[in-house]
Amino acid sequence: MLRRNWFHILLALAETDLHGSAIAEDVLERTDGELRLWPATLYRALDELVDEGLAAPLTGDQRPEGESRRKQYYSITVSGRRRLAEEAGRLAELAQVAKDRLGDAGA
Image (cartoon, rainbow, N blue to C red; front, side, top):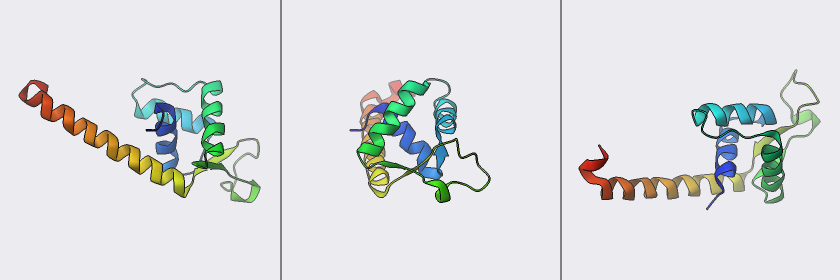
């Protein structure tokens, strides 16, 4: 099971490489403001994701053209995609269990 922050960070990176503040904005928007990743939380999580091999920092020539060298961009790794897919599947199964148990009461 992925931590909530990790799941949302990897989900943001699944579409494109992003720098820290763009990741935070994506997460905030996708969660309708429910999950705000403050800088200390975001960068600690990114360091952990890198340490676990689920995300990787981009080096100079890998950065998007025209972007500031001061911004650190990150990408999701193959292992990160696999873990994200596993977690998405687990959450989908859990959501189905909830729907089944709620029946008509959940409508």
